[in-house]
Image 1 (tube, rainbow, N blue to C red):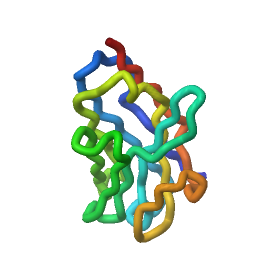
Image 2 (cartoon, rainbow, N blue to C red; image 1 turned 90 degrees about the vertical axis):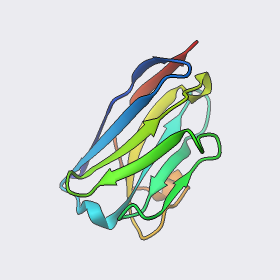
Image 3 (cartoon, helix red, strand yellow; image 1 turned 180 degrees about the vertical axis):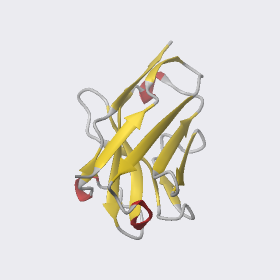
Length: 124
């Protein structure tokens, strides 16, 4: 059974930084696109960032471009999301997801492997 385990969420003030991590077990990690999604109360789940198998290509949601950076370490089976200049509207549950594909897909329904989510709360 594939497990994706997120960590690094928490409370942070506006303008601060956090780094999320997601480690995959029992997964041929390098064959998978990895992505971060988020879901705020009452809103649809949206893609934050996705990265292809070797990190050569990444996609970012419009609201996080220039502030967030996704990266991966295929030796550690881990994907990271560095979040800088956090805003109150970044408050959400952040989910790690995996998809066996060659390019990032933005639609959450395409992903069949999900972590349990980690809460990020940005307060002013």
